[in-house]
Image 1 (cartoon, rainbow, N blue to C red):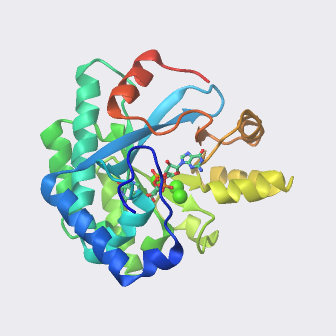
Image 2 (image 1 turned 90 degrees about the vertical axis):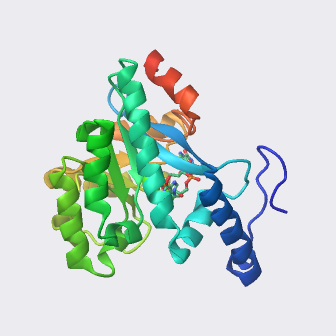
Image 3 (image 1 turned 180 degrees about the vertical axis):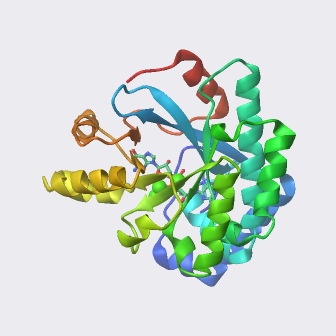
Length: 275
Ligand code: C2E
Ligand code: CA
Ligand code: CA
Ligand code: CA
């Protein structure tokens, strides 16, 4: 039950995902997508919490005519090593898009891309990024990467060095999904990132329990460390208002916009939509 037509999400039971056959079929579809260039990017706006105005997009990968979502195929791509090729495509595509928007005279054209731990381990990542910035003539300030705390699990020292090298290229780094894993506060003092993205689950837990002091404390701690704070998965006006009071810097979520195809993302920038 993979292809069920557009806009119909099918069920992915945990047992199915873990089953060998299921993985093989996802891997097969992934390889086909890599060979035939069947990927595209969706763009979701991240807005300034204070003004509600558009700041930049996060790029989110999809497979054409497929119902398999990235939270299913990205782990398979990581297991099979296909993520290296896919990840390079994502970075190339995002830089090309930044250039397209720049050529259209659009000033807000920044894109943030997700980068897997295996890509951070890739010895060629830094030279790849440097070459792509030059080739596309892209300002590194228009490009950002999102990493997760799992880069601290193995080869920590090497990975931190790579993150420092990324920053030396002028590219900012966001720490994604904060609050989902080990999320120790201590590593915030030494991981070289510029921004923290608080996961939707953390926000749900602490806003709903009227436990907003936790979010507030976390945010002021981040600000004390000179880190910007994004909250993900904002779905209502209420949440948005609440988070604004907590001094969050940026907001992202369905309340502002779902991820969009590039044509709609272009219109979004052109109209400089304010929620
Ligand atoms: P993520 O990086 O945490 O991306 C945010 C996810 O939350 C996206 O799911 C987005 O569509 C969804 N989202 C945004 N706003 C809301 C909201 O208000 N409510 C809810 N319920 N969800 C919201 P998506 O696009 O399905 O991506 C899932 C995950 O797949 C991403 O989570 C990321 O970990 C991974 N991923 C996506 N694209 C890439 C990529 O190019 N490279 C890598 N390595 N991973 C990617
Ligand atoms: Ca992300
Ligand atoms: Ca996230
Ligand atoms: Ca997430």
